[in-house]
Image (cartoon, rainbow, N blue to C red; front, side, top):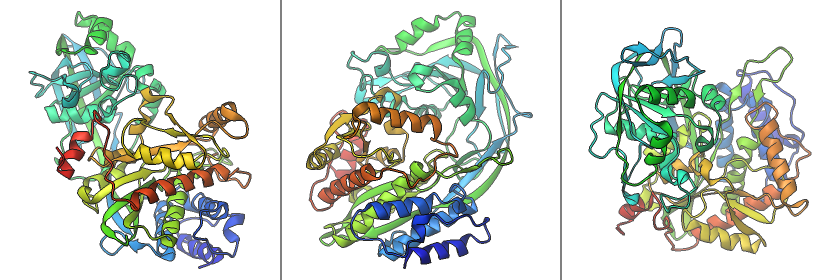
Length: 556
C-alpha cells in the first residue's frame, strides 16, 4: 500500500472521530517503505503517528484507538504475524477512578486533634480500590524507614512488625541513596526498592491500611509540584472489580514540612530517624499519638484500550522470543484557551520509539532471525505503564521462552552521537551486546548521568523486568559529533523545558534525523545478535531481579 493510500485509509477511519487536519507533507509521498532502516521511513511513520488527526493518542480515546489501528495495519502490511490469538491486538481493560475531592477527606491527628492537611498543598491522597466509598478510621502511624523488604540485600524494614490496620510512614528512594559509598543496595543508583510504586505495593502486601510517603525533592528527583499535579484528578489503572486486588485503603504523599511536624508532635527527631533508616538493622518506630483517618468517595468507569503486537517467526528457534517494546500512547487533548493548541501530539514521546520498532521489525522481515522477534507497541504508558503492566501480568509468550527485550522510549532528533547512554547501567548482560554493537558504530557506552532518579524504573521495560525478563533501556548520547556534549546537553534541556509533555512536542521537517537512524540501527543490531544466537542473557549478580530469572530458567 502506498503512503498516500495509507493516509486515505487513516482519514476514513478517523472521519467520525475528529475534524480532518492538514496532511503532513511526508505522508503524502506515494512510495513504499523499504526493508532498510532509512530516514525517509522513520520520518513518515513519526509524522503519521504525531498527526493532529490522532488527537494526541490518548489510550482509550477515538484518536488513540485509531492510532493503534494504524499500527496494526502497518504490521499487517509489512507482513508480521498477528501476535495475540490471531489478532494484532491484546485487549487492555482500564479503570478510571476519580476522587470527589470536595466530598473526600484525609487527615492526620495528634491525640485526636486534626492537623488540617490541605489537599494539594500538604498532602495528595487517593485509593486504588475500585469501590465507591473507602474509609480509614483512627489508624495508628508507624515509621518504617524506607519500607523495603529486599532479601538479596539482607534488608527488611517490616521485620517483626504487624501493620494490620495501621498506616505506615516511609521515605522515598532507598538506603543506598543516603549512603552512596557504603556498599548498601546499588549506592547512588536507585533500585526498584526506591520507587514509590514498590513502596505502596509492599505496604499492601504487609497488610497496611494506609500509606504515607514523605516527599523530599532530592531523593524523589522531582518537586512537590510534580506530586500535586500528577496524583490529582482522574487516575487510570488496570480494570478490576470492587474488592479485587490487594491495595491499602488510602495511599498518599505528604510534604516534608508537614512530615517534620508529625515527627515533632510524636516526640521524634526527623533527621536522626532519617539517618537511622539508612543503616542496617533499622527497626520500625511507633509514632505515638498520631492517627490517620480518611473518607474517600470515588466515581469509576471502565474503558478499553489495547497493546498492538506482531511477530516475525524465527527460522530455527521459533519458540524463543526477543521482544521490542515502545509505547504508542500519549496524553491526548487538554482544555486550553480559544486559539491555543490543545493537542499533545507526542512526536518525540513516543512516536519516535513506535516508528523505530516498526522499522526494526521491517528490517527483520528482510533478514529472517533464527529466534522469533516480537514487536510490542504498548498502551497507557503515560497513565502509569499500564499496557506493559498488563502484558507483564498476562504475557503472550511465557517468560522461560522469552530471551530478553529492548525498550525504546523517546529518541531526540539531536544528530549523530559518539556515545550511548545506558539507563540502569550495570543491570544485565544485554549491555554486553550493546557495547559490541556500539563499538561497530565507533561509539562508547556511558551510564545514566542521574542514576539516583531511577529512570530505569520509569518506562515500560520495568513491567517485564519485574517479572524476571532481562530488559535493555538505552538512548542516544549527548556527545554529539557536531557540537560535542555541550550541544547535546543543550538540546536535551531545551526539549525537557519547552516540549516534553506539552503541545509543542510536534514533528518538524527540520529535524536532524541522522541520530535517530543511528540509534534505530543500533537497537536492530543488538536484537539481531541476540536473535541469531543461543545465548540466554541474565541479570548481573546482585541485581534485584536475578533470583526471579534464575528460578524461571531453573538455574537457581
